Image (spheres, rainbow, N blue to C red):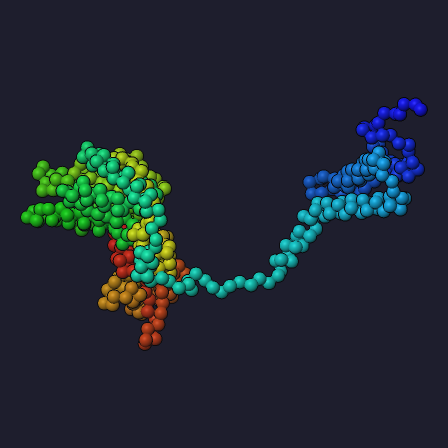
Length: 459
């Protein structure tokens, strides 16, 4: 016996059988020549690519896989009948044809069923709801405060530890105030209780004026009048008069504190949320910077908005002389947000009208006559003897007042202007018991007073 031949690729070589030779010839016959042009029809896409190449590549890959499979089965010694071989080949061809068809459909989707699906969806009838945000029930303010008080306190130990760390810096803050700097606290959480405790411990010997910048009814004139009232209380025999306009009041306050022997040594001005909406106007920040520049006024303030530093340019920053302190407390802003009924959906503060800020924005784009009409409506609502915030003025009475003030010349113009107020939800119309049309402004009485003062100052 001769020496057996070496195994080929780890398998014992076997003599070719007729079945193997037939399958190998069939696989080689179907493999396309490299020099032959592709037989598959081609079609250019949107960007000029030939999509038929994908089908040709799929055929070549199919032939190579079939040849490798035939060789592998033969080397492994597997045997099968001709009918089984033909069945396997037909199954492979069907799977490859399905893959090619699926690939072709994916390629042609943007040119075929894509836009058809879009237009069919566009023509289909959609069902929409008739519910609107204005139909949602509004929470009463008393219920809102009661709900806030019942909320559980999260992480009380960690908050107490953080508060004790801030209290260790009270001595440093007091020293910085004594050398002529002002304090500005920033960070996440309410800083109202922290600043109140600091003022109580280190500023109790000086008169302190607290300003709630988060209050929507706060005005520059009201803040300056409060400072003037504190100065008048310190010198009851002086018979001081600071004026009626904000500019005059501010000038007289600075002059009074700059006198050689003022009855009031120092004044601590504590402003919670100096970046509040009512304190953001440039004229308000300018007045605050002039007060903070005076050496007898010590300013302590807090901010919550991330863009609050944009309120002050280089000139204001130089006058304010702030030293910034991180006072993160993680305390909830219960008091600060209790005034913002527009966000919380609380009834009774102009939630239907977009709030005081929205009304100011609309008024800034109207003509002087339109603002005058709205001012007449505000004054008439304030003059009402009723304590209800929704009590207004009859339509005919408001029209006569506007004609007397030469704001309108005919009822058509008056109706046109009221239509604009209706569109922006600045005016609410209702029928009284007698069937007369009554107009009112959906704002609280304090917000109406603030708006009236600002509009009169602009005139």
